[in-house]
Length: 250
Ligand code: BV8
Image 1 (tube, rainbow, N blue to C red):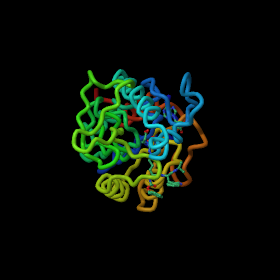
Image 2 (image 1 turned 90 degrees about the horizontal axis):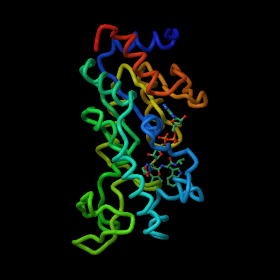
Image 3 (image 1 turned 30 degrees about the vertical axis):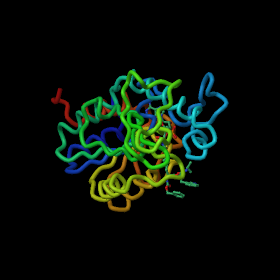
């Protein structure tokens, strides 16, 4: 039985012409990938993700940072999209204009069949050189924590193709995300703690432009003033509201 709030969100989606979905690490939690604010485990338990996801950390200890990203990349490769990712792909097949803006670097939206995904923080599945941003090939068989490739053009060490803290976001991705937040009728904000800027301000931007905004998160602290709040995991909440919105669609 859905709550009134879930029914309101389902109704808004049914009437929507343009939907924007903003996702964070939480939507990949049910695929087994730790979120950014989960405490790290094992060897990594003495680090905080945000302390490793910086150019300063890479300069200080490139092999440590390279190892962390290699391990996360292999986890992302082994992970499967979950019901939350698949529900968003289904939404794209029903509503003509759905833009997905993700803070995640794991590629799971694309693996779920979603298209046109805007990767605000880049992708863990690409590498480039640290000094000059030369694109570098990443062949899976060579991708190992014990082998840190150097750029064939300038010799600089490889880094992951992600946006680190203190780095600018890709201009085009940010511009497209701002446009999508400003033009949508409905925005779903799924699985993000709303801490990291500028991604975190996209929800309030949508509200300012008169959009219907709904937050999907098991943590009630992520409620957004002015938006509706659906408490629960994305893998349960998203399929539920799609089922309510389009009961006959399979
Ligand atoms: C920028 C890629 C301009 C790497 C990431 C000082 C100096 C420089 C900048 C700053 C500064 N102070 C502040 C800033 C801005 C900074 C920032 O926002 N810092 C924060 C910590 C305050 N931002 C930046 O630096 C950005 N660049 O501003 O450029 C600039 C430049 C120079 C100087 C000044 C300004 C760049 C930010 C990008 C950083 N890169 N990722 C990598 O992945 O390794 S961010 C990283 O955090 C991930 O991408 C992650 O997605 C993202 C956000 O976190 P969330 O996705 O929200 O994840 P989190 O774990 O926090 O929350 C998970 C949520 O899911 C929780 O709410 C949980 O309840 C929920 N959940 C759990 N399970 C489920 C669930 N939800 C649904 N279903 C479930 N099952």
